[in-house]
Image (tube, rainbow, N blue to C red; front, side):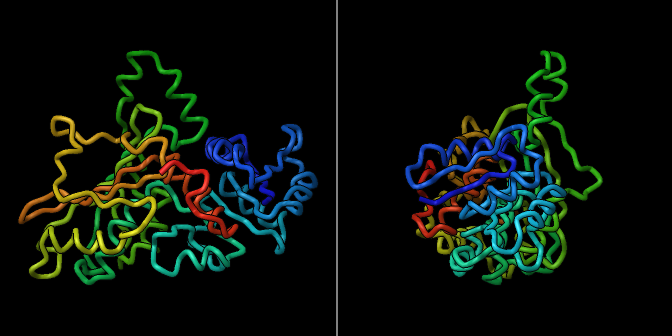
Length: 315
């Protein structure tokens, strides 16, 4: 039985991870009293007793926790703090064929961000295959349920009365164009320049879409929709949690509209391509609290522990 300590268990992601682990017979959750959550000695003791420590903390607190844990403690960090930090392994198993082996061996794993996963999994294979030149500047649009903002945003949106709820139905943010996920998107996608990222928060709890628009004039000569689809399909063939849907898949649309929530409460990530001879839209759909956060963390934990990576996860 593996002993797991979640430092920051009371947060949104921590609660979601706990829910997935609590029912498992192969996991013992080491829990800290509410009064000791900021007690370094109590946390150190639990970290020393754990096989893996999962950090669900703000970035600064996550960095402090790594110091408290010491070099002998195996860590899975769900914050943004270490995602492009040297010495940390990026916890996106589908990134490249050797990534699972790296996660299995790693003493320090950084869980990926919600928005970057869809962007990276859409773009990286096309660059690796030479269909998309790394020098092409990219823009990416993302919309997520408000749970992605943590407890404060959840409380705020949950308390909206009808007029305010309508006014805050869909709100772009990070308009200074320095969203904290951009360095991660840039680092792991293979793009030469950081993408221009436009995120939006929707007035619903969970579920997200990522969209990357492209002109075919930006792609390798004679590339068409079928070629793009073939690269993605071959890259993710056999993946447990990543599905490449048929081209221009109208069957998933509701009177022409694409739902943001159809992958909710699962660890499923769907990749889609829509377009014609001039334009293509790359789309990813998943649950920002599932594959985007807690589900991804459990998937990484399973790999770190050497068990089947789908254990405890909804496909």
